[in-house]
Length: 341
Image (cartoon, rainbow, N blue to C red):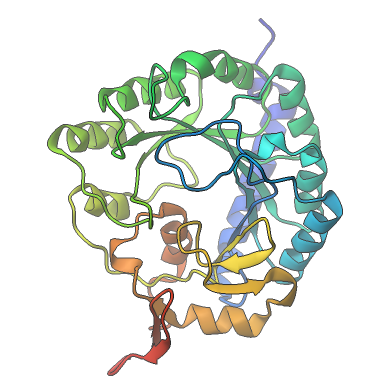
């Protein structure tokens, strides 16, 4: 077998440069609140799989044309967005995905992708290297495919071996508990395999249909905390938030969705997150720094029982500043919080 790409001189140089860029964007985020830290953008709602717990895909959508994706990404660049992550649906079904990634890098953003991994092969991984992908996350739900999820270690293990050999980008394997996953212990097996291959690993808790808290059972919680003990450091690791969820406790935090975190759907509209679509529902082409400022100071009533960890990770940067003076319930009206300080 050839030397893994991450161990070659070129791979090590890319990793060092990536870490330097990550440190720079953290510094930028701490220095100023006037730009998005992360935007998650959907180039393709279609997915080749049909996981029972997922509400983020369909079987009919066409890909967003590359020219339109470039316009949306350019505007994110003008807003100063630090990280742009592609999600779906399944982004690897987009016929011009390499061009989307190259545009993300052209505007100066870190380029990430969330994928089910089914369509990866050695040639595709090399193309992602050339396009400039920085981070990839693959969620693996179980060891053997079943009626809940086909994202299984049995199916994907050869893909992971290809990534270990060829990928010059960071790879994180995310296992899950809850949401109908039949054998919680699968998450432990998956996490150990990720570490064996040299990847980082995380574990998530599957939320309900509104992205809200669904406490774990006793066995699920046991496995969850065991996997957390194995975790290799990754750019998406914050323990306390998910640990409270695992124990059925709400979190007290300041959600900066719509400001520091943007979710842009396939129609080009900005939403708080993948589970609160429709709010604020403004086209990204019309989104301004005033919108960012308003949402930075707006509390979201869904925040205490939220399980969307990427929003929390981004919002955590600003947990110590700018108490929020207004509150909105998705679907409701903006109100002033009495006694806010």
